[in-house]
Length: 285
Image (cartoon, rainbow, N blue to C red; front, side, top):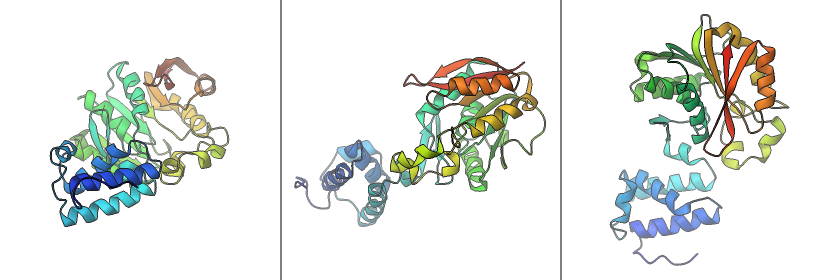
């Protein structure tokens, strides 16, 4: 690796060397990630690092930075290393108990917000709570329930509700889909596991190794969770209630057919920023 021009122990030197190591590990955007890691370790804004690249890095911050950099070089997801992730207008805690919220999933929120204003919202497989909390943040009169198979995920989602000032309007439960729920909801959200089992080992290591398999594995054809959810939606949805489900690429026809077979009306789809039909919008007939 080439020499770094700034003095040893300086911000510039740390960023230079970290960028080189990250690039060698085939990490995308190595300079940006180096800045994020160092700013977190030093507890300063990332733009502040660029003002004085010759400034020294305190010893404790250097130790924190080294530990965080090693985790990232092992392809642990950046969000897990930092401990949080932005989604919609929220800042959410993350952990290996949950999937990391992704920008693609904001299409689910967009689709939900285009429908009628809900009073009661259900989020199945809530993870960090990102979908439910984003919708609640936009509908001040709504109350929500999030369910996740993992007690750790449900606890994390509850903490995210507190962190974002939404705890009074959200409750999170550990359970298998909607098995323990009664009553009806105006809006049901879900980002279920939808990746075919055989495809998971071929995913990038950040996903295949570090994110929870139960939240990824949709069975042999990727549709196991959709079969359960669509079958349950008629009893969960209020009259004219809507459901918005996240889909993998190319899954619209298959999941739409499952929904129609369960007696639901398919209202349409909503694409993510990449043009993928990411959200399927359903309604109780």
